[in-house]
Image (cartoon, one colour):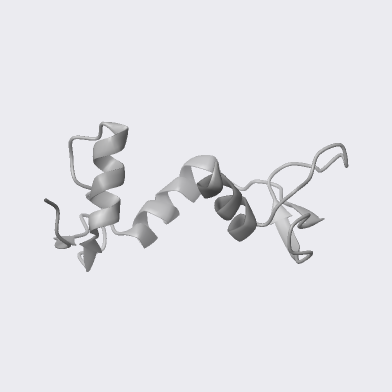
Amino acid sequence: MFEDRTLTCADCGSEFVFTVSEQEFYREKGFENDPKRCPECRQSRKHQRRGDRQMYSAVCAECGCETQVPFQPTGERPVYCSDCFKARRDRF
């Protein structure tokens, strides 16, 4: 039903691929419009809206690597790096 499509970013003008999995995700979430910005510009805008956030160092409870999180860990709950967090989220 879907196939990869090449779109042009409204901010920087570069081309980016709107993949099949991204299209399926958009449909699942009920989004009706295609993305107008490339992933890099979307990430940049997201950071601009949030402003400078204080980040805290933590050790991932899954893989043990050093990571940065936007909240101060209390030790009551495990903290995961972004890769392990995504992997856990995808399992459930």
